[in-house]
Image (cartoon, rainbow, N blue to C red; front, side, top):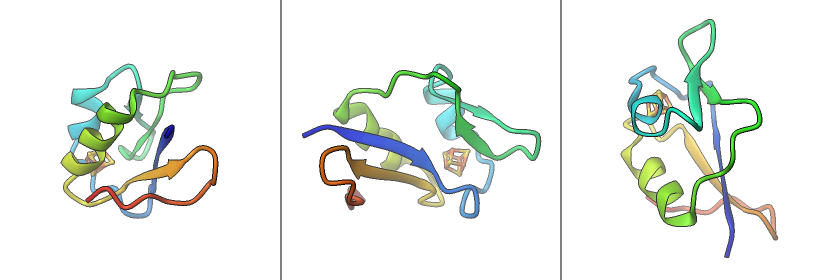
Length: 74
Ligand code: SF4
């Protein structure tokens, strides 16, 4: 199973949790919303699940790379 993490900017509340926990993966855009660092390597599946669960607004989405379907890790 391989996961991919992404940000729903419409849901992000700019807590900064993901940016603090994984600064090589996330950064703030000009609106102070989280976005993926361009070219960032996706974290391990375990790390992706931890990051998604730690987001206070549920803005971090997890998808199965093979099926493309969203995975509920909360
Ligand atoms: S942890 Fe969630 S709410 Fe906080 S900056 Fe990241 S995506 Fe936004």
